[in-house]
Structures are given as structure tokens and as C-alpha cells.
Length: 165
Image (cartoon, rainbow, N blue to C red):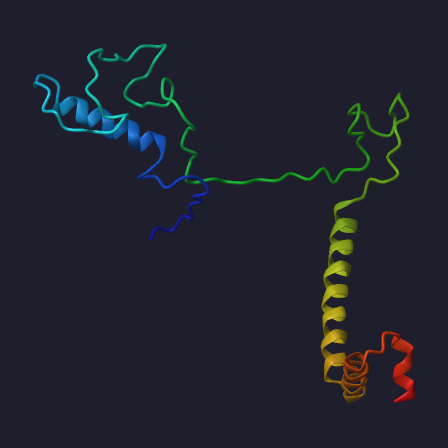
């Protein structure tokens, strides 16, 4: 394992179109001046009588330009995101406070406001989870659930009938 992470979301590198092309090119080099040996080599690996040359139009050595099928994606993918956290600049026209088109920028927020809202959302989710876990441990909630189950097994469909038990 190296120190860099790789992302492999497409076909395995040994089975993608680039690997098939490279294998076919290797087989064609081996069979260059030989007679046909009557061996089945799949649709992609038969002997080619016309040898493709490297030109500006077609790059036969790489197989990326003239090849069929999807191109192999780069393994070392760097995803970057840029947020526009400058509400004083209009994203419609690029002007600042003197926007000549009077575009509405009231819903723009500063970076600190985005972070604060995100933190509130995270803390709210954590608190909801804690409340849910504490409700599961509460014996009164447990007894109510048992009573609801007993009523349901008797055929009662109204949830307000549990008080009568």
C-alpha cells in the first residue's frame, strides 16, 4: 500500500477496454510474421493485417483515441470544492454592493453563518439520538409498548384504548 489513496469506481483495470486493447496489441506483435495457427482468440484478439501507426489523428500506442468503449478514469482523483462565501459580491453579475441590476442577495450567508448552521444541525441530530435512546430505556415507555402489543394482538385498532387496560 502506498501513501496515496486511489478511487476505483469503474471496471477493474485488468478487464477494462484499455487492458483489452493492450493485450490485443501484444498478441498482434507476437503473431506478426507467423501463419494462422487456427486458435480461437476472442473477437478482439485476432491478427490485424493493417498496423496502426502513431499519428496526430490516432495514437495507436495508448489506445485512448481510436479505441472503442469507455476511457479509463484516473486512479488518483483529487476532488476539490469551492464555496462562494462572499455575500457582498453578486454571483449574477459580479458587482458588489453597487450591483446595477439590483439582484436580490438577501439569502447569501457568510462562511461563519454556514458553519454555525451546520453545527446546530449536527448537535440537533445528536440530541435527538440521545432522547431516542433514553426513551427506549424508560420503563413507562416499555410498559406502554407492551400494552399496545397486547391490544393489537386482541384486535384493537384504536391507539387510545390502551388506557382502558
